[in-house]
Image (cartoon, rainbow, N blue to C red; front, side, top):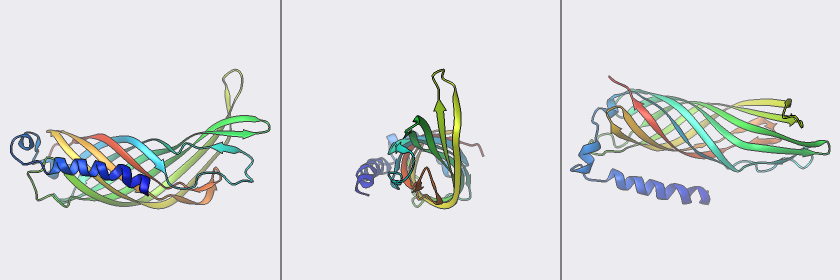
Length: 225
């Protein structure tokens, strides 16, 4: 948790500085009063960091090397319910990274990917401060997560055989916070921090806990009324 706070807190302080810019001058140039009345769709990309299990069990036949952090992405659609609340559907991809499997018969490569599907509610606690050019939101959500593991055997001629594939699924929740900065009538810049606990009932690649947090940046399209 120390590592997480060390990155997250300075970013929040920086963007709160943007929030507190006076409404005169610069703030008026970018303020879009219709933003909190419209639906929003977009995508984000950033870094996902694992906080769950680190290594496989000692008796597993493969020796695996996991990446602790990797690229992640998600796509979403917001339905505006009021100026203070929006309903969101999102789908994402969190990679555990490429994995190298080693055993006596040779080396194999593979991957473990996590696909979260969530429905969430976005609360805008400062919606009444209309002079702010950047909008803060808090976002709890629920949904389910699918995990997929694959192991591939490459030969000398660059062909390959899929020698093992497994999937797992389970229910989970998310806790998220972010900022939306409308810079044009139909364009908004996005910043999002999200934590998702993931623990499957059965191991996937000999690990059960795939919990992690992500920090993503993106662009949203503000739909016309």
